[in-house]
Image (cartoon, rainbow, N blue to C red; front, side, top):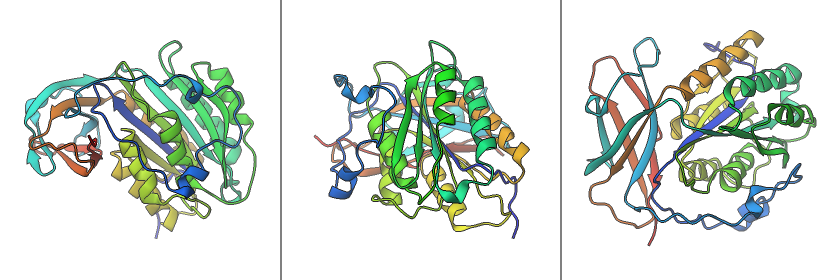
Length: 328
């Protein structure tokens, strides 16, 4: 069975909104999760060493980034809040606090590159494509990114910076082999790099190159998805598999992406890799942001679903599936 619009690069872009974010409880780490809580090597001083910023905001205000497309998959950028229906925990929301088109918010982005033996075929081309993507997306003094390579462990080769040359150097340091701990890499990137709330509106992003075939992780796929949702990120997946077949790893990437409101790409030809990066870049500049107060909200720590639908015919909406309420 062949794939449609197959790419050859396993890439996850995790993007999210951190505005007047409702507070969230910290995830209780299991021994397995605690064991993977530190990157194996760090190129520069981690931001985690800095004092943690405490932001006191409403705990009953939810912020969601989403996109709308027409039946041809083209982004629709001229809609307003009356064009959408929003359900929280299957109930209409109590109040829409803010609705806006977010085409110019700062981006916090990470590049996670699978260095395992299973992705070696087009590794050099994929690194060049990822570097080109960063060059097009990042705006000096406004956006920033970091680079992590992973196999059975994760290695930070460049911490947050807006310097594309440093990021490119971090990408070209990546070389390895061995097994694949994809879920660990996603979990750690979200928890250690993107989990803290910002004091200004930002979009968060992580790019992961992988085939989706995890065989070394300490955490589960569900735990990785939960951490992404708790960190308010979207995940975009680009598969490194170029077999033309639908394999298990492709379904993994699709599941992770859809659970967080992102999108999975499956490039077949090398030129399609560049096209996929361009599609992601376009999407990052075509998002809507809504802030709302749910009905019957309890700060009980449980998972609450989010359903955003377009009222206009032939429009599709993609958003994360839900969030975890804070616990007080």
